[in-house]
Amino acid sequence: MNNGRDHRIDFFRGLALIFIFWDHVPDNPLAQLTVRNFGFSDAAEIFVFLAGYASILAYGRIARRDGMLVAGVRILRRTWVLYVVHIFLLTLLMGIVFVANNHVETRDMVQQMGLEYFVGNPQQALADELLLRFKPNLTDPLPLYIVLLLTLPLTLPLMLRKLEVAVGLSIALYLMVPLFGWNLRAYEGGGVWYFNPVAWQLLFILGGACALRSETATPAQASPLRQQPLFLMAAVYVLIAGMLTFSEKWPDLHTALVSTLQLDALYPISKTDLAPARLLHFLALVYVVARLLPTSSTWLENWPARQTCRMGRYSLEVFCLGVLLAPLADMANALAGDTRPMQVTTAIVGLGLMMLMANGLELNKRLGRYKTAVAV
Image 1 (cartoon, rainbow, N blue to C red):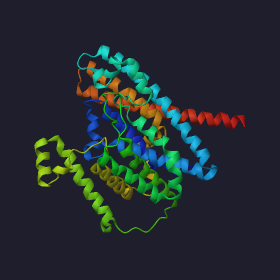
Image 2: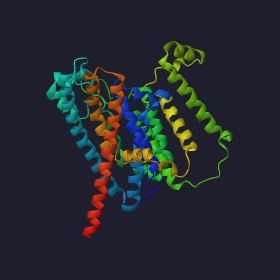
Image 3: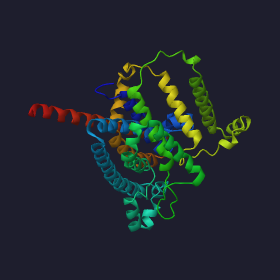
């Protein structure tokens, strides 16, 4: 912790941004290292959970200090910023994809990015884009975050007063998804939202609940991990999920494992509706990691960890850059014949550019503070 900021949260947000970028580049060898290869959940869960954690922690403090009205205005102002950023990001992304598609012959990048609707119906697509109904591939997390943040002025007061009730209502809403199929509609013929806000709101609320609990929790003398049943159950679930997911690289082995363990009913595991298997895996993973992590932040003092924290600190800007870099990396890979060395190179160069942006933003922030201090 430093100045009230938990750098562990910044670290895992930065790690999620790296994973998201690598996962977004087709056939990227480094994507084999991301969390999605070792369990049912992936970086999207990390992103949403920590968005809830950071948002509710920050605006909860503002609400306690300045009142709910001020917090609500700040939330809506931030939501507007995210909306403008999303529209600007889509404009840049579509421009990059159309230019890249003119130079790549081995694949249709317009189709790959889900832009056929825009090509066929440009006027309606622009209208749907403004209404968050048309979302090309790679851009789904931001509209989800916008909707979740837009509802925060309604949920935050209840969370600050009756946290258990707020979490209970969130769970009840989550359970309505499989019963009634609730989701937001996409553009005409486009089905529904890829990230169902009615389901994913639970992860956002749970992140906020953990943040609020962390403010009031008192350190307790914990028994050894091997004597903690909840930790053992969570660890076993994480290991089984990892084994099943990793075995998907060998379909025959995976089928045999699922059949042997009698887990056929577990599949398919929906990402859109945040299937219980995904949700439980992520929560188990969070619990295991939280119990294993050192209570101090000394492990974050090395250079790679500091760079990862810095990216997490500027998560919006770095996320947007990663979205724009993904099709550029794919284009470079295609032009180089999709060779393995080139795929690794573009993944590392992209990561380097994300780090460079985070460092530039940090430097700009420090210069701003210096100018303010000099002026005073």
